[in-house]
Image (cartoon, rainbow, N blue to C red; front, side, top):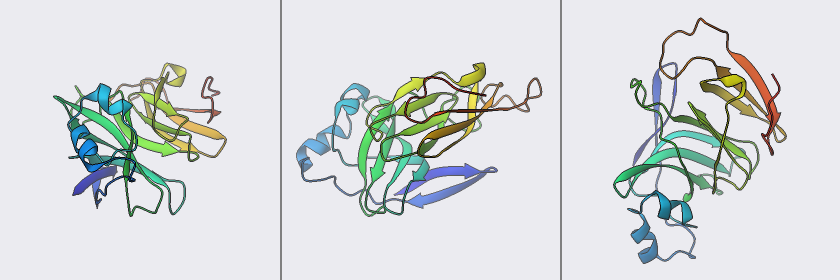
Length: 198
């Protein structure tokens, strides 16, 4: 299955991910029943296989074995923004959690949303774009965080095991060149993200 995993300077890279069943704790029958589940049921599910129809938007690794992908997949009558993860270098993948914001639609100003995923440790991570979300449990649950400096979008985010750095734009998604104010650089503690320093 071809998955969209990111873009650099307008170029789109494609990656093939083979979705393999999650650990034996989930029976094939139960897992199959969740593939079309709506957002509420999806967010409560544990140890599920990769959702059917999952299309990756962004990928991030903290080691040669452990990584995550942010993407979207059908769920009920809607589309969910899902995170999947691997702990064996990509040989097997499993559903981790759902982020309550849409994936950004490039070229469509009416559909801003999430575009990238970054992890600092096996537990602490971020997804960002026109919104900013934070996880402390490996991507199972996500909390929305206010973009610092009254920014409209996070353009880039980098992490160490203790600190996260975000480049923030004062202009909204897909509004063209932003000349009112310069981009700004902010930092916060990766584990708390309660306050940002410019």
